[in-house]
Amino acid sequence: MSGMSCSESKKVFIEQDNVIPKFQKFLLPVLEACSERPRSTRDVIPELANKFGLSDEELAQLVPSGQQTTFSNRITWAKTFLKKAGLVHYPARGEYAITEEGKRVLLSKPAHIDNKFLMQYEGFRDFYRAKKEARARQSAADEADNASLSSDDESTPEERFRMIHKQMEAVLADELLDRIRSSTPRFFEHLIVELLSSMGYGGAASDSARVLGGSGDDGVDGVIDQDHLGVDQVYVQAKRYAADNKIGSGAIRDFFGALSLKKAQKGIFFTSSGFSESARRTAKDLGARIVLIDGERLARLMIEHNVGCRQGDVIELKKIDEDFFDQEI
Image (cartoon, rainbow, N blue to C red):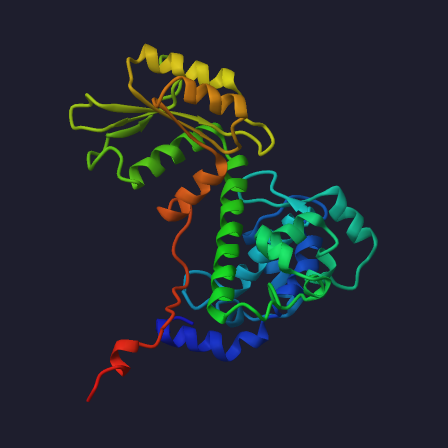
């Protein structure tokens, strides 16, 4: 595909996309690929390409945004669906591995795995329906439908589109948190400083946002200079915890003490998990000096400010211009 323009590559995607198996055909092969050891997407591409009998040209086909191949995109979505069902997990950054339940599934020698098969798992059902309101509306027939998110005929096409968009953002948020939790604490500290810089904290100076850490940090992980002289500073604490390991009140008090040692007026406590009720009460009782950012909000901020993710396809929704047609001519 050398020398092919962007428009030409998109034409190939439209005309030849049927050569690459549909997404659900990837579920079982992707699970089988990690049956013996953790794998990465890059690692399994040649293996699965050979299994499906695809050529180099077919493997080079791009999604409409031109930022990823169709083949790797479908592998990535297959991993996400399998993870939501609890058949794989992410042991380290960039890798996925089979779980005990995944091994049990393979031992049963299924002819195929599709969305209907995955519906037996509560985690996948919750993910597939995306929102609590959508779950309440769906009937048993909706659960068996593996072709769409919902068959609710009372929704307009635009409402269904927005529901799909919200689900895709929820998938991305979960993926970001999974990657964070499998990274190192030091990487997490750098990520937080990068996020705050992207949000506009610290101004344009190259050293206005920096990671501290190590000896002499007095219990803080990063600092943001709000002015050129560093007179007004915001200190940061970053705790990379598992989803079920919530931050307690003791950690909030320790951070408050660290801020006092720095004679700082502002602090932001980030975590990849959540905060206990006692931790939130403690932060509130200590005044407005400490802002708490849990994993859910952290992921939303990363998406909003393109940290750890990037813009993919852009779809414009056109509407009738009522003023144009209301003109009296």
